[in-house]
Image (cartoon, rainbow, N blue to C red; front, top):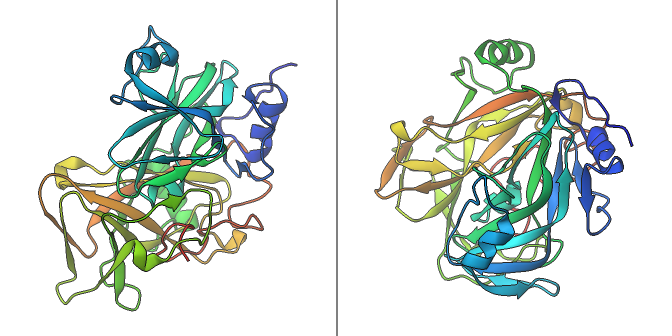
Length: 363
């Protein structure tokens, strides 16, 4: 079947479906009905996983299978589910494989719910020199590296921890493009947002009726990755409340769920991604999970603005966050076409119009 050609931009759900029909996306099982999102494809775990001695990249001269022979400690069957323990590195097959046209590249990211559980996951390809990056024309299998940081989790074949986005050409806006788009669409509710390699997002420590976030508890029970609203919040999270100082001391090694001060909007003809925080201005990291789909927080998709939920972890020393402090930047990208369905528009999207919200696993 002949290759399709696409305008420059992030591919929409319709175009991703084209890739499936032309064999550029293949799978050991038929895709689930809700697996293709407005601008991304959810990836499903396969039946096999391995407990690894360490994380790795195969480099340009090796497939992942060769690294498994050297680094795998034992094989795990995910058919009926298996517990993945904290502080351990696992590698799992992914049901989907890629045979991309020469002009199409891709990138992967944790799904929002994955990041909110502090499950560190990255996608690896054969001959990869970096995580989560799939070069133009890649043909081969995909693997998911998984390392739960805070909670032990139950995963099984079909669990979705990552999503992949396909792009044709240079899709990211430059500074001038971000300034023009903000003037047209009001990307964040800030009178004068900082725009430099993306639009700045700051932390809200005034709170939602005083609640500013959650700190994860230690030594908790198990979280089933495939069950919604199955766990009690109080069993896993300690609520945090605003103080007169409007500041929060991040303790090293602790995991926090916080929210942005700004409401975020992603126009229908664009997508966005949170970029890593600059370590030169703070000893902490925002675990920027997932993509922001077209329509996130947008009125056209039933949204009235939505906060960015932030997964935050300090490094080796305590660090004080103050209300309004910049913690990340949203980089916007052009869509190849406007999706037929937007995020939140009849798709059962979990985080449209969100404020401070934990993952979908909690009731």
